[in-house]
Length: 83
Figure 1 (tube, rainbow, N blue to C red):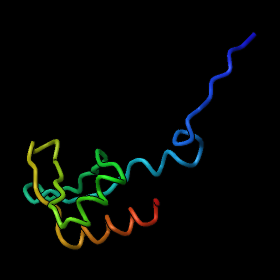
Figure 2: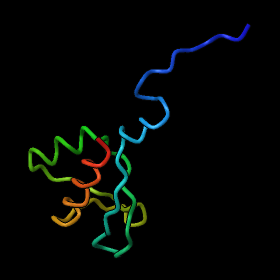
Figure 3: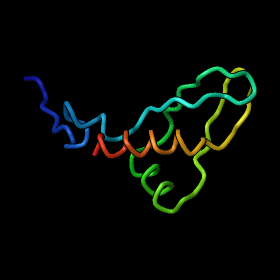
């Protein structure tokens, strides 16, 4: 007999995309667009609502920077679309 496991609602098909929001931020040092994928939707909402800086990271340069105002707007759009 195969055991049946209950899959939590947040892991079901179509809902995992709501957990994390991928966005791109261009490294000011090397100028290469870097994918940023370590932020949950709720963390980004808190940072945006509180007007806190959102930090991005470049693997090649090993540098952190605060995303630009334009990038913040794009992130807000992505978060809104994901919710």
